[in-house]
View (cartoon, rainbow, N blue to C red):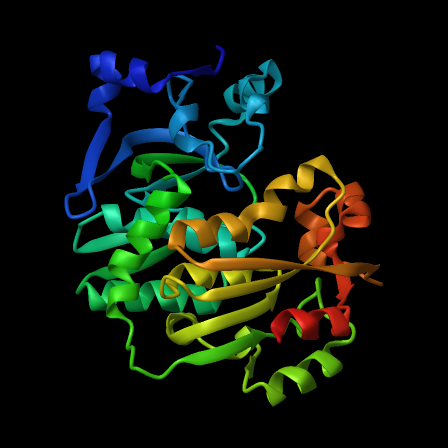
Length: 345
């Protein structure tokens, strides 16, 4: 038995496969979402469903940029599933939303969350990774409460599962994800005429801390900036502040995903390291791309990198050791204060 891929055209033209998909549509946005409905195998990292007939749908479920899913089509994996399928934990009657096993806020917000809005049932058994933060779970609960729906969480560990009588929605492209999030979340945010200039500190984060941040903060406070550590705010509060911002300054990091809720024309100043590895190319333009989608004025300031002394446990678990050691993304930063002042002035 070999795992085989079915393209979008094959899904449409194969009546049996097509009947296995529910076709949801948000009419106000003109966005469609295919939802596989039935029995399937899936891991809790890629969330790449494999039917009981060993069919997959790469066009719909390969959500990570530059992430190869070729290993799913290997003989080794087919053999593993065949030999262990009766040992997999079975999960019934669930909506496999998924979430980042490393609890990455950018991925949870941009890739995973928008897909929840294509299920209109009054009660949903929502499956996520156990590592999803309480803060994000509470955010999802609030969304369901506002929509007068009930959500029950089902948690995954790092493993393969058999899902029975369950649904798994396709992943959307980033433009459509941003549209969906603004339609359902941003329009319900409390906004007033007050505008903010905000600086996002990563002082309690493991990576991309500004080593000389005290000098930077002293200057920014003199310019009327509010200094924020997003760890101290609910996700709803974060979104409200970004929605009111006229200027956002931040070291590169997942918290910057909130810029999708900013007003068009908001200035975004991203402090980032110089990326030198080809695998960093998508990280280097991630927030520039979000700014283009949201109609923001994005500027990037390059900072010098300095190696961190210790990596986080969750990073060591999910990220290749070589990447942790050599990538500028997993370093701290030193800002050239005089250059920064010139730019801001």
